[in-house]
Image 1 (cartoon, rainbow, N blue to C red):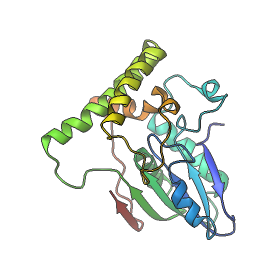
Image 2: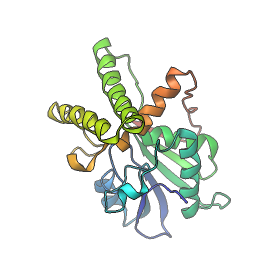
Image 3: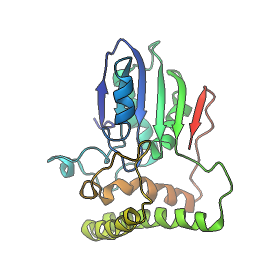
Image 4: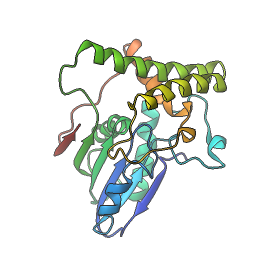
Length: 226
């Protein structure tokens, strides 16, 4: 059964924190400094999106053409969290979600709110009216990621990965792409590939077909951080 890649820290008897990192972080680097500060007092479960996990010898054997759409990720995340915290139990957790993990995590909260006591949402959404040039900037990089993924799945994986890597190198040189919430933690350039862009593809696919629906604003206590 497919699950979100995960790693745990601390004592399972302590209060539970579940972390879900977004692009391009894996289950280790996304929140590692924060978890190191908290793992003595909390049970920390660190997740990342399928396909963004730590590279290993078996990584490409797990590769699935076209990866996972949002509805599939909803079910996979439910199965993953249910393994640690059964949904019919009385256990609750604080959900710390970042970037694409915030979109997926908020969708999960909309469908399965029972066990979530609090949400901490990091680096997602526009909370001000940006200048036109900034809108163009964000749309450009997102569409390039989506296009390179489309090419990799429909035409040739290596061609799509070359397009992605060239653009990624430009972003690195311009110091645009930084992992969050700590900029000092970096995945290596070699450890990131076009497979990790699938949510950009699905977001624009649904947006262009008019089928993209943003998750409803959660009704539990929220700390929103940009």
